[in-house]
Length: 346
Image (cartoon, rainbow, N blue to C red; front, side):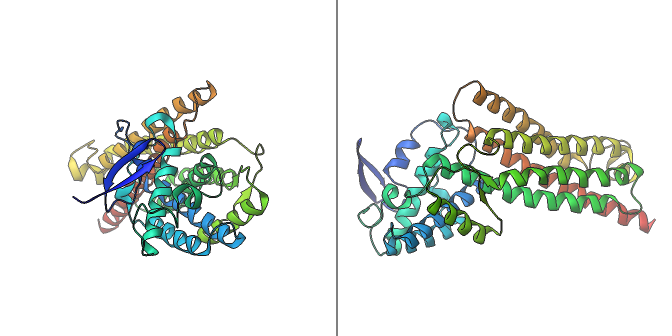
């Protein structure tokens, strides 16, 4: 395997020649990894923030035009799912989201160098810190990306719950399902309520930069993001707790619905009287939501106790929790559609 050598203040390290991560990422990833995978929504959102930052810095003249253009292209590629295997850090290790920011800066800088027809690791034309990392402090970059990731899943999740509510209201389903149709739509609105708070982002950068950054991100995501000021608005911890609580409440309701439907004839024919054969998948996913919420609560309690930045632990549970609820709702929707069709055919 071909290698390249990169140097930082701590000395030299050897890396695979084709690696988009650099020496700083390698050192950040040196600690033993946990089993948690970085949610794809988090990486996508972080890439979007970096791409918007490069574009704005280029427009303001604080970033060389070529570096701004190539970094924007690189960020777009990462946002579309490229180079994911080069994100090797574990944000949960050491409870620091800055490691993910370091990894992103390295990947973007090396991809930008490649677009400039330069060798990876030749950071004279595009440096991970001086160019890719130019803009907001790492903590605020991660804060903004975290909110964007939650907004993405909030939109997908509420749409899935609305569709589930429509399916549960179909003729031919048992009263328990039709009764819950209205509640699931209410739960969707509860989750959507957290979206309004997520759209107000506390940032401490220069208004000339942060205002243009949020407008650029708004154009990219189709959302109106507003600066909340350094201390204005609700803290990230309380926002995530509120969102997780809404997701948890919805999961509890759907779990209860599954238990009540266990003896319905459509389920009985699939696997015997009282069988959960058709509902095992949704139940398993909903149980995961409940577990993620409990871990998130402990993490946010740690913040209040002064333990430090628990954002990685929070996001590594909140984002998969929302994804599990969305998948569970999708499976229940399929069950409801199949049950309604079967009943109409009888």
